[in-house]
Image 1 (tube, rainbow, N blue to C red):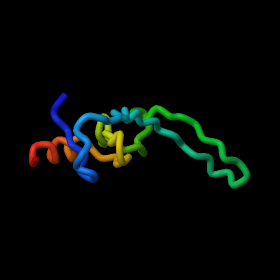
Image 2: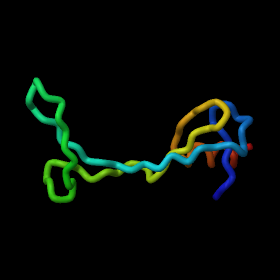
Image 3: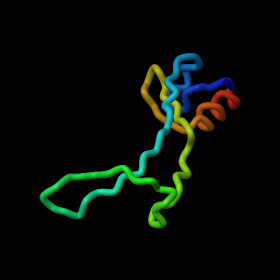
Length: 79
């Protein structure tokens, strides 16, 4: 893993959480009286755009800032 530094507190260079992004497509019911949701296969449903977010995000273990990993890496390279 590359060097990282928190872009917010700029002091943390060693304590981080790696947060896996696991997208789950859900379709909510139109029934007002129900809060029913069902998981759907987004690859077979033409109305779902494919997930294009990051595979994971990083959280600073000191201040709690959550950003894409590039932000933490860029901050480490500037210092």
